[in-house]
Image: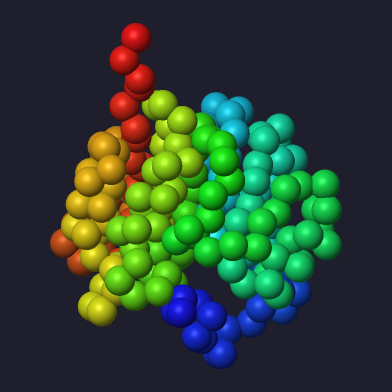
Length: 196
């Protein structure tokens, strides 16, 4: 079972969203992920994998992107559907979801990689790669540290399915990544363009 569903110490659904509303009300920017994802996808299609309550997906759709959201937490997805019923939402596990299409960008924001079922991370990366169009990008941001999914393992999983590291930052606002002492990474891996 996913680490996320095993946790009972985190707010879910509308309670989870309240944190973001409070931040926005205080003047904090809450769309760093959408800013970067939007720039990298250049108006293309986006799969928000592990979309939660839809904060990123809804903002991307507001900016004109075609967005599909997937999450395995029904309470989080209920909130997303209530906020944006016009968008396409799927209750599914990233490990085996099959949307029968590809996207210009697959996004895994919000620490998705560290909340997966232990031992499934490489298989999730492979499944997300299957949803990438030629030249498409896989973008993931997650916390680093003892006992967490290792960046080297993430890179190896991406390389195993033909994705190459294109960019790495320490924040969604593109602060430079310094490996020593890093506690967060945003990684962009890209699928090669199809041969012509």
